[in-house]
Image (cartoon, rainbow, N blue to C red; front, top):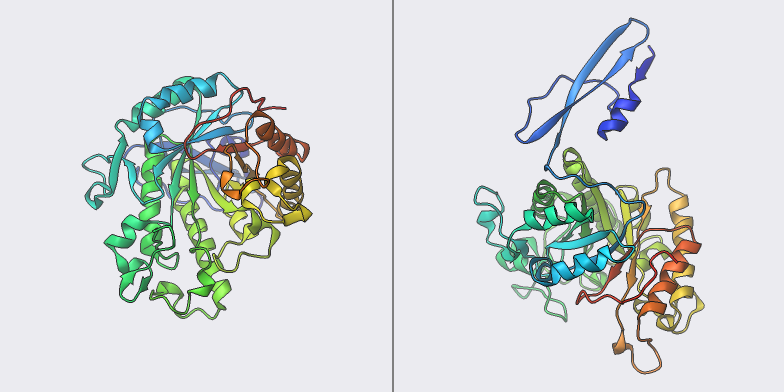
Length: 399
């Protein structure tokens, strides 16, 4: 039996039409109805069903190509916000990545009293009125991306050591005093997906997951730290593949759970992960993660590489480093049937910790060199990272 799907309608509402039309579902609160259907050519019968997608009441268009900057909760909730809105508006930039769950595990705003997140006590309300922030971005048509730090979560680890890693009965922390929670545990997945859903309801158009990984060097601690494997307890995979599976499964699960909210899903990933079959300790497999997201954002700051690609001092050669990386990524994404959008993180900060002779003072020329390297490789989206949210003046963002 031949079926002609009403593709134009599906495209218009932005949903993926399933192979079989299902019975109409009960309308969830705050969702808008969207009909789709198909035509049974053999019998002349038109069947239809209805899906629902959350409507935040805000309207953003995806830019010609996302060119964005990063904002902490402090910046988004303070006087600096308007300065950065003006900065974006006066340049050929069009997007902001805003911390919604920060590097410690705190929400950067106070959830509404009826939100399931309110009772968790994890908010530090730097952003007093997140809706007002998003309405301002809508007014200026600045594409809003919610950054959610996932498995690096000191707050949750200290509240729930059973979701973390322990050493001698205490929550294990790395050399920077940061604790992680386990990608093996679905309760941790749901904690972050709940936050992502609320960010989508606020009006963000994209959810960007960061720290989607095990702690760095985990392979050296995997046999000495205390933790549970959850549903992966009886896995027959080797330790590396079990970590890869857990990380990949989280990404796929999050994307599925966010589908009704009409948001894109992106993941930040170490740049070097694209150069290996997988990053064995942290569980990141570039291709497998890429297969489950709309956008992949490799962190390719020149300062963060050692002597890769035959470049002895990568921070001194921003164009060459990014150009060499782009070759590898393009090849890797070219192997996928449905590759995501590539939107790398670029360096707009000075890595003075590398020591004299090993770093450049980054500014206009160095930022433009990285962007040009991407453009020359056919990659036209990017994000700029500066932890203090101070971005270089006078940059041509479309060189």
